[in-house]
Structure formats: C-alpha cells, structure tokens
Amino acid sequence: MTDKDRRIRKTRQVLRQSFASLLAEKPLEDITVKELTERADINRGTFYCHYKDIYDLKDQIERELFDEFVAVIDGYGVDNLRRELRSVMTDVFRFLQHNKEFGTIISAYKTDSLFFAWVRSEIFRRGLSEWQRIYGFQDSIQWDYYLDFVVAGCVTMLQSWIQKGMRESPEEMGALSERFILYGPGEVLGLG
Amino acid sequence: MTDKDRRIRKTRQVLRQSFASLLAEKPLEDITVKELTERADINRGTFYCHYKDIYDLKDQIERELFDEFVAVIDGYGVDNLRRELRSVMTDVFRFLQHNKEFGTIISAYKTDSLFFAWVRSEIFRRGLSEWQRIYGFQDSIQWDYYLDFVVAGCVTMLQSWIQKGMRESPEEMGALSERFILYGPGEVLGLG
DNA sequence: TCTAATATTCAACACTCTGTGTATTTTTGT
DNA sequence: ACAAAAATACACAGAGTGTTGAATATTAGA
Image (cartoon, rainbow over all chains, first blue to last red; front, top):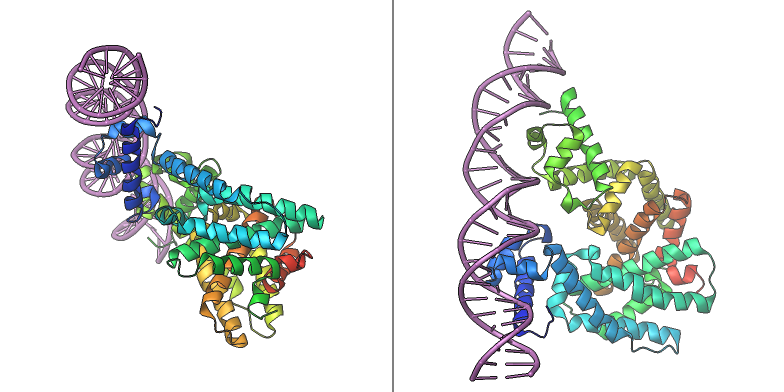
C-alpha cells in the first residue's frame, strides 16, 4: 500500500477529482461512497482499501494540503515582527492562490475545515506566541479572546477572498490583514 | 398540527432534549432518526410527523432560537453609536447566558451554524450598514473584508465564551468586543 | 522477461437506516 | 361525551454500508 505503485496514485487521484466535483454540487454530508466511486469509475470495494469513509477521504486531503502549507510557511525567519506578519499573511494568500482546486474544497467546509483548524492552532498560535513573548503580555483572558478574534477574522478573510474569486492580489490582502490585526478594522476604515 | 396540543409540545420538547444530549456525545452527521427517537422514547414514525429529517430539526431549533434573539435585540434605539454597539454586544452575550442549553447546540456547529449565519447577515449587517451610512465610508472592497473580519471575530468570541463556561460577565464581554471592533485587538493589548 | 506481490475487480453477503404507508389506540380540545 | 387529531405498532421496499473471497490485472524488481 505504498504510493510508489502507479495504480494507487491513479486511484486516489481520480477519487479526489470526483470528490471535488461532487463537492461543487452538494454538501459533504450528502455525498455517498457509492456515487463517488460511480463517478470515479472505481469499484466501491476499492474505495475501502484506501479510505475508511468519506470523512476520512476529506481529512486526508486536508492533511496533505496542510503539510504543503506548512512547508511553504516554515521557511520564515524572524527579524522584524510587523514585516514578518505581513509576509506570512501574504504567503498564506499566495498559497491558496496556487491551490485553487483545493481552495474550493476548503471553503466548502467553512470554518469547520480541519485545514483551517490546523492553521489556527499551529501556524497562527506559533507566530502569536512569539508575539506574546516579545510584548510580555500577561492578561491571559484578554489574550485568549484576542487570539480567537484575530484568527477567526483572518480565516474568514481567506474564505471570503476565495469565494469572491481571488480578485485582490495576495500582497494587497496580506497588507490589509496586517492592518486589521495591528490597528484594528475601525482604524483602517477611519472609524476610530 | 398547531402547537396548542399538549402532545405536540411534549413530543417536540423531548425530541429536542434528546437531540441536545446526543449532540453532546457525537457530531451531527452521526445522529440518526432511529437512535434519536429511541432515546426520546418516541415512535420513529412520529418524528416524521414533525420534521423532515435530522437537519430539519436542527434548522427549526436554530430558527426559533434566532427569532427569540431578534426579539431581544430589536428593542434597541439608535442614539450614540458606540454606546449602542456595546449595549447590543452585551445583550448578545446576555441572551446566550439565558439560553445555555442551546448555547451548547450552537457552538457544536461552530460557525457553520444557521443561527450564526443569520446573526451575521441580519443583525450585524443591519447595525453596520447604519454605521457605514453615518461615516459615509465608500471603499466597498475594504468594507466587505471589514465586515467579514469583525463579524467572524465576534461570533468566535461568543463561541469561545460559551465553551470556556461563560466565566466573564456579559458586560465584560460586551466591552471587550466593542474595543476589539473599534480600536482593534492590537491596540487593546498595547501592541499597536 | 519472468515472477512474486499487490491493487483492483466482481459478486454476494448481512446489516442498518430511511421514508412511507396503514390500521389501531390514545389523548386532546371543545 | 364526542369528533378530531396525534401517537403508536408494524410492515415494506429501497438505498447505502462495510466486509468477504476468488478471480483478474498491473506493478516493481530481479
């Protein structure tokens, strides 16, 4: 069951393609193994050689996508905090731009996506913990809600950007999200 | 099928209770009509007299919860923008405090909840459109992302607050969310 | 090229849940 | 008390599931 075998790669690929096309038509909970394998022209029993069920397929896709994502982001060094923040955010938008086909999948799950949960807990918190250390912030209650507020806001920006067709450049979006995070939305819009 | 009949009220109530208890044990997609009616000690056929399927039950619960929510919020008049914002947010937290049993249900769906989607599109946008009118803000792109960022942040704060056991008072949370919205999280924490 | 491994196919299996229907019993509002 | 309505018990076909075992096809490596 190693992925060296061409048959395995081919089977998984066609299953993913069919899964993506089904997901464009109906919500995740309405997709059955039966119709997925029919569309993929794969024997139903074969599906169970690779995945436990539909949710397992979804999880594996998200997991691999996340690993690629981490590989992109991990190359970052820390020098200036603000510059790094904008660069990271820009790269996040860039990454999704280069993975449009999975972007559709991701945004279909909204914020219940495992992918976004991982981004939330690992990448963002990693960066923000550093941030917290530097600024020596202590009030853990406010800090918790700060994390929730900012991360949810950014994740939703990513999804909206995807759903609106990725009109703005990753640089624009990276800069905008940086300003939202640092100065707050109100300030950016001149409402403060 | 009016709700004047005591049997109807009783049946729906026990179905909702059982649904809530099942939702505490497993995700929504794993809950079947069969096990729900068994736990509720209701004939399975009876379920179909009231609801189309499990998702219909969920939607109706959220719909009714949302209607109560709107009734609470709708009493607000507009005088000072900032004061109203804090009051509204405080009342939102207060509302969830008085509906703990459904708070669990709501936060189980995360942000995919219909309830939160409605709060998002109706209540928040209503208030923020007024806000936009007053300040005469024109850049629609930034405005869109501003909406997404702030609303998602607030919704997530609500969920986190529920999941952490509603330790802080609604007044505290209302004030904190107001500051996040107006001045941005970074400013509040002294990071700006 | 040959072979051993293994991925896939195919048919079949028992099983669960669904949605619906019908006849019967119980409860309700008036 | 009576008619209407709701809940029940039961049956039914249909769909999907997860799993077998044997046959077939494809692969990697010698």
